[in-house]
Image 1 (cartoon, rainbow over the protein chains, first blue to last red):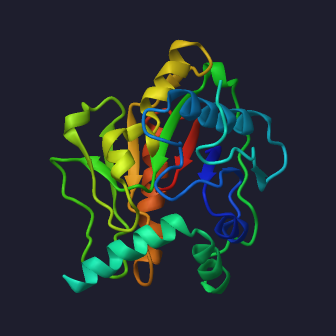
Image 2: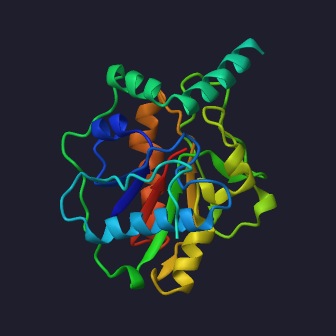
Length: 74
Length: 170
C-alpha cells in the first residue's frame, strides 16, 4: 500500500525511514496546522498527495519550510 | 494525580520545545527498518481511493477509549466511518495537547479537506473508514503493533478498496 506521512519530528523520521514524508516544523498536535485554518490544511494535504504521486526515490522527505503561524497560505 | 500533572506539564513543555524530543529521539531505541518499504502508486490520484490513518487517538465516543493507564501505551486501533458526525467522535490520548483537534478534527485527521479534494476531482474517492492508533506504544506492545494490529489495519485498508494512505501523527 503506497503511503505518505506527515511528520513533525525529523530525527524520528530519519530513524524510522518511511517511504515518503512531509516534514513540518509545527508543534505536536498540529500535523495539519491550526484549527479551522482551511487554506493551511488544504496546502498540507495537497503537498502530501503531490509527494505521493511524484516521489520516485524511497525515503523522500519533503520540507516546505512553512513557518508556524507566520507563513501565509493563499 | 501527581503522575497526570507531570504528564500534562511534559506535554506542554514538549509542545513548546520540540528540540527536547529530538534529543530524546537520538538516544531512544526505535524499531528501525533495514530497508525503506516502497510501493508505487498504481493509478492516477484522480482515480484513486485514498484512506486516512492517524496515531492521534481518534475514536467513536461509543467505542472503548485507548488505555491511558498502561505505561507502555496501547497497540490497538479503532475504525470509524470517515464521515462520522463530529459529536460522535472523540480523542483519547494524554501524550499530546489535542485541544486544537478537539475543536477541529481536521487538525489531526483531514477528513473535510480530503472530501473537498474529491469534490474537486483531485482525488478519486475517500476510503469508507479511517483508522486510528494511539501513538504511545512501547515495550511489550511493540510486537503486538508490528505483528498484529498494524498488519490488520493494512488488510482492512485493502478490503476497503484503498489505493493509497495518508498518515498523520498526533
